[in-house]
Image 1 (cartoon, rainbow, N blue to C red):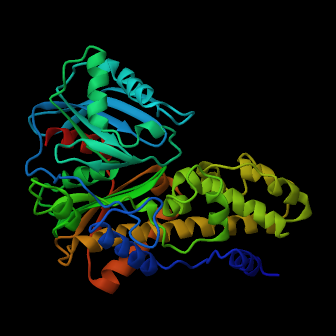
Image 2: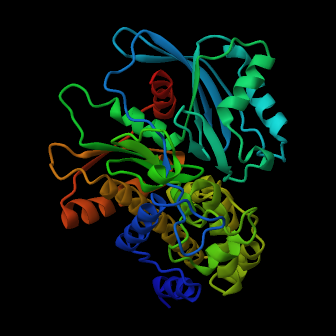
Image 3: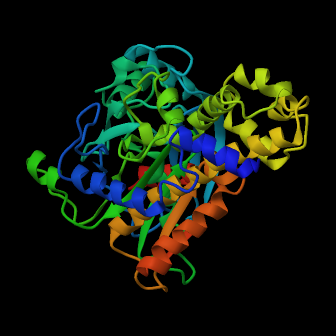
Length: 446
C-alpha cells in the first residue's frame, strides 16, 4: 500500500483535506467577516454574522519618525511579558535598554482584576519614571478608545483573568503605577501586536523605498492581522457621538475568531478541550499555542486507525500533547532519535516514519494556506498595491511564521499566485528585529 494513499484516506475520513481549504476560499470567507465586522460588532460566541471584531484604532503611521525621545515599552504576549526603554536618537535610530522578561500573568492560574494590574505594575519597577509615555502592546482583543486606551473584549491563548474583561487597560495600569509611587504618565497608548508590526513596517519606508499601504501580521502563539482601512467605518459613524472619524486608520481584525473556515474532526475534537470551545476556531487551526495539540489528536487518531505498526502503535495511541517545537524538530531531522517524536519511532518501521512525516507536514501546509489567506484578505481590503513600484508592505512576525519548516516559503508562493498572478496586486513581506518593540515605541510618540 502506498503510504501517500493511506495518509490521504486517513485524513479524508476525518474531513481533513490535504489540499484545502483553498487560499481563495479562506480569502472570501475572511472578507465577508471583515466587511460585516466594519458595520457591526459580532455576538459572543459568533454565529452566522460577523465573527471578527474589526477594531478601529484611531491611529495611523506618523508622517515623521520620532527623534530625541524615550518611551517605556510593554509587550504582553501569549507567553512572555517584556518591558524596556526605547530611545530614538537625533537620526530616529532606536535603541533598547533595561529589557526584562517575565511570565505573562494569568497563564498559570486565574487572576483577579486587581492582582492582574498590580502584577504588571510590579514588573515595571525597573523602569519607574524613566519616560513620561508608555507604548503598551497588549496582544488580546481590545476596543480602542479615541484617546488611545483599550477596553479588553476577550482573552485568548488560555489567559485566565475573567474579571479584567471590560476593563480599560491604560486607566487601570496608571492607577496601579501611581499606587507604587510613579508620577502620572503623560500618556499610555494601547495597541495590538499587529498594529505594532504595521507601524514598524511603515518605519522601513526610507532611502528611496515607498509603499502604497501597510499590513501587520502575527503568527506565533496566536494569529492576527491589522491593515489600513481607507473607507468610512459604518459602526464608528453610528456608535461614536461627537468624535470625528479619521479619513483612514489602522484596523485590527482579530482574525483568529473567524468561524467560517472548513474544519476537520481533529479540530473539533481539540476545540472541545479548550477553555472557550466556541471561540477562536481559526486561531486554533493554525497558531503555535494549538498546533501541537491538534497534531497530537491526529497522531492518536492515526494509531486508532491502525496506520502505525504494532511496534509503535501503543506509544502513539497514548502520546501526551506535544508542542510545535517538537513537530518542527521532527520535520527538520526525521531520522534523529534525540527528539521526542524520533524517540517514539525508535521501535517502528520506515513506513511509520514516513506516515508520521506526511501527517505532520499536511498540518503545516494547511497552516501556510490559512495564514496566506489571512494576509491576502488584509492586503485586498486596503485596495492598494496595484502599482508594482508601490507594493503593500507586510511586516510578518511570530515564531510560528519565522521558524516552522517550509511554512514561510509555502505561504509566499500562495500569496504570489493568489495576489500577483490572479489579481495583479503587489506586496513585500518583510521582517525586522525587535519589530513589536519598536512599533509600540512609535505608537507612544504619536
